[in-house]
Amino acid sequence: MVDQRVPTSVPFPTKSLDRHTELSNLLELVTGSLLEHVAEADAANAARQSGRRNGIIPNNQAAALLPPEIVSQRLGLSLSEKPQGKNGLVELTDRLLRLSVNTWDQGFMHKLYSGTNPVGVISELILAVLNTNLHVYTVSPALSVIEKQTGRALARLFGLSGPYSGGITQPGGSASNFNSVLIARHRAMPFINEKGTSAQQLVMFTSVDSHYSLEKAARMSGIGSQGVYKIPTDSEGRMSVPALRKAILDARSSGKHPFYVNATAGTTVRGAYDPIEEIASVCKEFGLWLHLDGSLGGSAIFSGQQSWRLKGSERADSITINPHKMLGVPVTCSFLLGNDLRQFRSANSIDAGYLFHEESSKVALQDAVANNTDDTYDLAELTPQCGRKGDALKLALGWVYYGRIGYERYVDKAFDTAAYLFSLVEMHPRMEMAAVHHSVQVCFYYNPSSAEYEHKVAAKRNTAITAYISEGLPSKGFMVDYAPGPVGKFLRVVTNGTTTNETMDSMVKAIDEIGHLCIM
Image 1 (tube, rainbow, N blue to C red):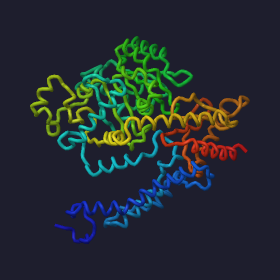
Image 2 (cartoon, rainbow, N blue to C red):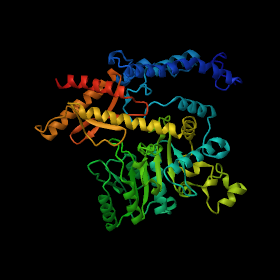
Image 3 (spheres, one colour):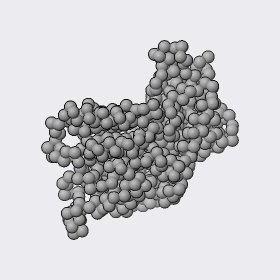
């Protein structure tokens, strides 16, 4: 019985049999606002390119200055009993865009991702229209094939060329890293999935500069934070291999069970690449799983100029790569790659006959004897997740449109622009590098305290100046984050494939203007 309190003329999700017309009308209503959002970023970028003054450049980062209570007030979100129809949809869309940071703008250099590209938007639209789950092949045949082929192509780039190599998507780099720990744990102690944790403590190793997701993975997998040995780095932020070897020996002598080493390709703050080749040799010597967290820096594999940084990646057991970072693919797009996906399946597969029916088919039944994952198209069998979005399409569609060479140019541009900013910092009388320049991050202090200051006083002063500049930059159309360093916090700028040298010039000028006010 229809609730008579609801007027029959208002929108109703299951009422229309002409949904393509409704979708067409709604897209027409919001497309203008969406395109204007991108156009505003393009206008700001063009203004910087032409050398116009900061004050004239459209400010697409102003929303970052607003506290939550002001955003809530201006957003005016009303989850009312009655429908608000097209007017409510359009008005909320417009307010949402105005109150959001515009990541398409080159002034956004705050995080390890940036705005996407037009193909990325198309891929998200396709996924929304398909609105399917990539847990079993029967409901997502084409997307399942695309994910398997894209994962295999990525694995091949890294040199993972075994007969069972490939990859699967995960909802972010943290999830990819977590799954790698689960798979490695299963190889070390296969009984854990059924019987629970062992009396002998499993321990894993990662550098002090690695992503926090490794410690989270240890917590969630029952290893615990104390089971994570954080290895010191050298002066350039790379894991110390002698320290790694010593830590493994110490753990074994104390009765613990080393099983996993994480090497990072592009650390979160400094962008350092751990010495993969040397770490791989240590892992082989002690029989440990080698995971490569290339969430950020793994995309350098697309570049002939930069791929040397990933030398030895073909020796990894698993690799995380996030195309939504250095490649500009829409958030979220993360792959966990492996040289033997049979290990992925054995660690994650569970009997759920109401969902997984592959073993019912004649072909799958024959291949089950060999556990050949090339014939596993129910991809949720390889991951902890059941609900899975077709994130591989975001990379695949861009790869088709731009080609590998297009991604190569995008990566090279990000590295080149970061190198240009590094040169500006080196020449600037009031700026000083806080870390060795490796990748697309440039870390520096503005007007750092001299040696005459006691260390704690200097660190406090540097942190205050850094925070003041970071908080002032959105008013000039830029967003830059900061991180803890050797003498207090420093600015960390992240470039991408669209960032130009002119944008770097404008940003350095803005930093100088704000910083000068702070130190007067």
